[in-house]
Image 1 (cartoon, protein in one colour):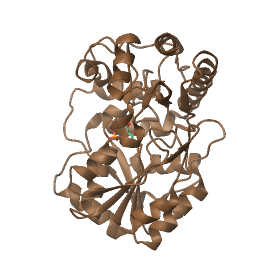
Image 2: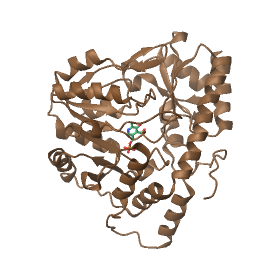
Image 3: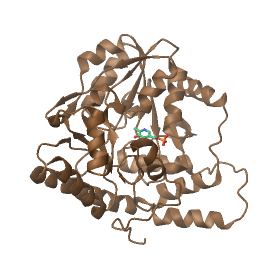
Image 4: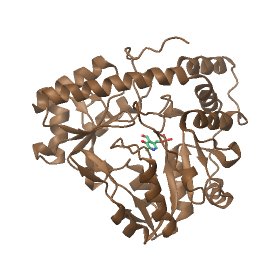
Length: 385
Ligand SMILES: Cc1ncc(COP(=O)(O)O)c(C=O)c1O
């Protein structure tokens, strides 16, 4: 394996990178450090790049059949890294996880029916419910001294009125890895009220030392549909592919009926090459990445602790996303964004986009080089100290 280099910042200019190109629209200026969209500034695994180049060398990019090793490669990966051996027969390939979120809302609830989310949460969780005319049942996470936990009592009240629960595990943006006991408690409530669970596990591979991701499906195979993807793990989210798991043929059929009504191809030639290569060959790259992210996390904690102690954060157990609490400054969100953009030159995701309970917080994507991260911290500290 070529040693991955997480100290080098490949220039993304000219690649139509969303993180760069959408800065003007998002922040009103195009020169902020882009610490928002959840992809990494690191080169994808070299084996993936080589496999894509090899495929691109053949000059016909025509209609393609599915690589039969895609699902086995993912199932082997989950079995090896997460202690649950799903069967490829209980899985299917889907477009991104977000389309599957929308499909789950369409398949498992009717207009006007309740769908539970736990804010602050990745914005498409809210949009999938609201744009399809379902009733958003928010069970805000509890937060004490920057530590997030579940509100099970309120969750049960929501479950009484719900058809579906959209679980984010690990949870973006707060970085929680839900324990087996926490998941069991949520799933027991869902069982009591016959609520179907869509478990978005896209961040499951990005764990910090000592953390264990408990897949939701094996805890309640009668009601969980789970979504996995290599997108975050190997920094290939532009490939737009994911997998859905369910052991219930009836649930899978309902989901697939939604996709069948709008047959979007998931068989473009490059995405599947990246997928299978990554799951089969890029484990050493992921291990090196996790070490780098662990170093980053500790570095940010140490710098904020000594140089900007007023800024608290929810210390992530997973993901490269930092959830920062600016409430001590007592300013409105527009004012906070203005200070970050104009005084610090930083483009972060505003907390309220993750639901009202996120107001006063900001999400910072730290998956960049240490040099760039330090530049961001220098600017943040100078603007807010
Ligand atoms: C929790 C979560 N789900 C889904 C996605 C995106 O999934 P996809 O690109 O496969 O649609 C993200 C991206 O940030 C995410 O954080």
